[in-house]
Image 1 (cartoon, one colour):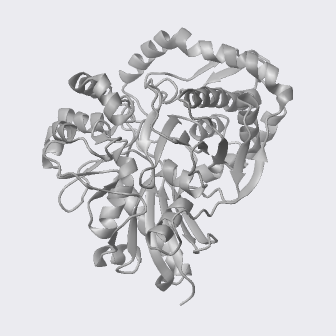
Image 2 (cartoon, rainbow, N blue to C red):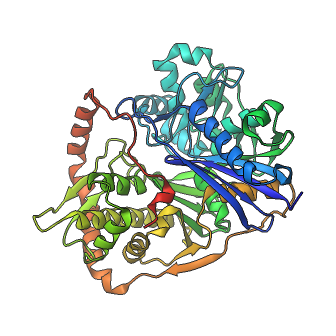
Image 3 (spheres, rainbow, N blue to C red):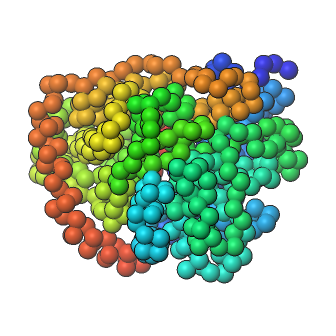
Amino acid sequence: MGSAMFLGIDIGTGSSKAVLVSPGGRILDRASITHAADLPRPGWVEFDADAVWWSEVSKLTRELLSRNDAGDLQGVCVSGMGPCLVVTDDSFTPLRPAILYGVDTRATEETAELTAEFGPQWIFDTCGKELSSQSVGPKLRWLKNHEPDTFAQATHWFGLNSYIVAKLTGEYVQDHHSASQCDPLYDVAGCDWATDAVTAVAGHLEVPRLVWSTDVVGKVTPAAAEFTGIPVGTPVCAGTVDAWAEAFSAGVEQPGDLMLMYGSTMFFVHILSEPRTHHKLWACSGVTEGALTLAAGMSTSGSLVSWMQHLFGDVPLADLIQEAESVPAGSEGLLVLPHFAGERSPILDPDARGTIIGLTMRHGRAHLLRAAYEGMAYGIRQILELLESTGEPVRRLVAVGGGTNAPLWTKVVSDITGRTQIVPRQTIGASYGDALMAAIGTGAVPEGTVWAQPDHVVEPDQDNAAVYESLFATYSTLYPAIRGQMHELAAIQRDTANCPEQIRELPEQSLRP
């Protein structure tokens, strides 16, 4: 036997990743698998939890353990995109495809139904946010309304990481952070299930046991060991939603710290010194006991870049970025509203639509790509202003995710927001945070351990401030001005029978130039 190692597994929108890490934070090995979500109807985004997620866990662990001594493995932790909804029978067999987080907008009517049923003020006061396409409760109500037979057969409901934990250990748990995104079922201030809401929405479904993300909740069963190659009895920690695991990996733990995640979607996690709320933000429990966070998320970022790359004939991304770098700041008057999959923050509108405005015959693909980066950055600036309006300033901004490997993207964000960004040396992401949770949960390293080390900083270029200030003002007027037309088009799209079978998107790590 060699030295101890810890296994972190993260299942994202475009890929699943696994990493083996030493107690000191050194990456020993890694593996990844790409995949694509199903889009069976407009507004629906799904995965087969068993055939894709659980199967990929097995493939990743067997690959890593074939190259490393399984006897050295001391702990496992899993994170995943979220909040997702998986409903199963007593044997933890899914009864339908998993329903994804805010990019799945099928439960619009149920969101309104539950808001009316409980009252918007009670929901906001209890859950720390309004119901939206991000909320799990409306997805459960949708299942009851539209697939009553499936709902009646179900006995358990999960998020992504808790589903994998159940498959590994046989334990039925939900980490507090993931639970705090199951609105309106969780009381953020009380750190417990909101009993009346759970009864009204989840009905007969058994309620999972609440745990913290670093808690060891069980051990790998013989059946799971046979499927995955992980030794029987290996401790398994609860894990959490990928963005919070990624924040944990980057050492975003102190009040005023903010993680900006450049991935298939853009996500923000802001650590709070005290409870704070905003109607356009999400107040959530953190990873460790007592931690509080405000969060926000944009529905497209890296996925929009990948869509454009495909639109341009799958030209290598490095070539496209090099072309876009030659375009002046402001893309010669071209603006992109990046709401191509509806939008979460800052507008919480599933019927928002992508917009390209200002096109002339002078503009080419390089302008479009740069304008897309700039459009995302204008949205990021709006969200940062919302976060700070609650009274918690952003004292330290840490940029993580595969998109940080595209220097143009981070540069544009710093230029438009006027913020310095710290980029860690390890950008492998949530799976690295999972491994750290496993090391802490098993007692191999003390609580408060931070593995992340800074690699470089991105400073704003003041020479671009004037042009971006002017275009930001214009950008901010666009959505309110054409919201009605967006909604009319969204209604037409919902009535359209033809729908692509899969999201065309590259995994986060392929955003490297």
